[in-house]
Each structure stands twice: as structure tokens, then as C-alpha cells.
Image (cartoon, rainbow, N blue to C red; front, side, top):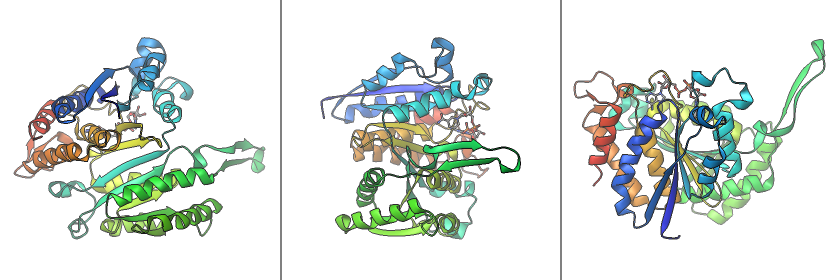
Length: 363
Ligand code: NAD
């Protein structure tokens, strides 16, 4: 790795710029520990880019991302741009284009429960007492969302609609290798989610994973049907370590993983290609209902930065420092409004204060 690492900062719309400012505070603190020259450049994206340049992903922004080693993304969209036709809307025209342009085929979403935030989860205490720490891995650029042919044909009662689920061997192999490697750095267990009792793609998905598992003998590989997996996740999430799935099933299971943690504002994500170039962003959207009020939770954005440091900068030590600081601040009772559960030790803080507190607790 060269001694310069460039990060393209794309704050976007709504709460994006507010929570991004907090991640930048954290970056400014940790960059001195990183042993590499970090250069950041900020670019417009989404609705704010439409307002200035007439397009959600202007050439300048795309070029800036191409010249960078990683992208830290806020969130895009909002009612101001809802009048636009779907093919001109901020999300489709910036985020999805970036994923495609950089071939970001693997999406990672960690989901864990903070001990002091049990009250936010819809799960019962006896289930939460066992804890959980899941890495949900979703294939992001293939499968039924992109398969051809798709469309609608016919008329009257014979009108029909169709979609195609296609997975190529190379698509399954490349995500499987990455998933095995992630599992090796964790508790060495993968649960692959499919519907191999019905779907050909799932049968091939299973076959390829089983064959590759011989190369990763330290990793325990098991399989679960999607219908059982959603039940098991409610009943006993502690049984999961790495969950691996196709685009469609991953869409479902990753949102369920988010739900059981109880707080969208705490959830980061990473979308990577095979060179570990990544786009890192909060799992939530631009939250227009709370934008500009200094009440949004910046933790997901800060954890997205932490994932960038772990996966693109390969510095687990510093990302751990950030995670520990967040845990400490939460243990002390500091909460943005979305995390407040009316417990006696809780203190409501603003977006800015939460960012400052986390920065201060990084040691
Ligand atoms: P949303 O995630 O923006 O908001 C859902 C709810 O969660 C809201 O009540 C919001 O206040 C809350 N929330 C989200 N993030 C929060 C945070 N950090 N702190 C505190 N509360 C938070 O989803 P939505 O309302 O369906 O979408 C709003 C806009 O965001 C839409 O224009 C949508 O297209 C866009 N969107 C963008 C992305 C993205 O950029 N990746 C993802 C999803 C939605």
C-alpha cells in the first residue's frame, strides 16, 4: 500500500452532512495513529448534486471517487426530489451507479447488541441475554434483481410478470472466498441461507460452497432455508456468526438483523469489490423528518468509518479503538434521542455532542 490513502467524502442529503461531520471529527483524531497520510476530498452526491449540477452523480464526484482508495458515503434522497421520475431520483442515480461502477458485489452489515441498549430490541430479555454478534454478508450485484429476462407480457387474465434469478459460478465463488476469509477472522462459522429445496440457483450455490469449504477446513459451514433462518434469527440469534446469502435473501435477512438490534442509527455497512475498494455508509437513509435538528444519531456513520479503517486500511487495531469509544459513551448513558429509553442513567445529547464524546473517548 502506498503511503497516501485518499478518502472521497460524500455527505449527501438530509442528515448525511450532520452525521458525516461527526465521522470527520473521529477521522481527524485517529489519522495520526494510522501511520499513513490520509487525504480527504468532499464531493456532492444525490439531491444536493442535482440542485447544483443537475445530476445525482456528477462527473466531478465520480472522478473524485475513482482517484480515491475508499468512499465514505452519508445518505441521499428526500421529499424535495420525490417529484422526479424514478430514473432521475438521487438513490438510483448515485448509490446504485457507484455500486455498479466499482463492482461492489459484497455487502457487509455487522449486527450486534449493545448491553445497555437491550430495551430498544423487540426481542425478549432471555434471548438477548445470550448476546449476538453477526456479520451479515449479502451478494449485491447479481441474482433476481438484475436477471434477464424480466418484464410483463400478455393481456387480460393471461397477463403475466416474470423475473429471472441467475447466478454464475464465478459470482458464487468470489463471494464464497471472501466470506470464508471473513469467517476465519471471527468465530469461524458460516451459515449460508438459501432455498435449495426449491431453487436451482440455491442448489448450485450450496454445491459450490461445499466444494470450496475443503480449502477452509477451519471454518464450519452449515446451511439453512430462508424461511427457517428468519425464525431462528428471532428465536436464537446467538447461534449465528457469519450469515451468507444471495441478493434477494440477503435483502430480507440483513433488515431483520438490523431490526433485532433495535436501532437503525447504530448500523453501518460496507460494500466492497475483490480489491477491497469499498463504499462505507450507514444502513439508514437521509431521515428527512429529523434533518437539520442536530438530533440524528451519528454512530452508524462513525462505525462506517471504522469499517473503512478495518477493511480498506486493514487496521483492526484503530477500528477497535473507535468501537470501544462508542461502547464506553453508551455505557455512560449518553444517548441521541432515537436511543433514549427513559432509564434513570440516560442523558440525551445532540448529534454534535455524541460525535465529540466519541472522539474524546478514543485513546
Ligand atoms: P430512513 O432510514 O431515512 O428513516 C427511517 C426512520 O429512521 C426515520 O424515522 C428516521 O428519522 C430514522 N433514522 C434513520 N437514520 C437515523 C439516525 N441516524 N438517527 C436517528 N434516526 C434515524 O428511511 P426512509 O424514511 O424510508 O427514507 C428517507 C429518504 O432516505 C428517502 O428519500 C429514501 O429514498 C432515502 N434513503 C436513502 C438511503 C441511502 O442513501 N443509502 C437508504 C434508505 C433510504
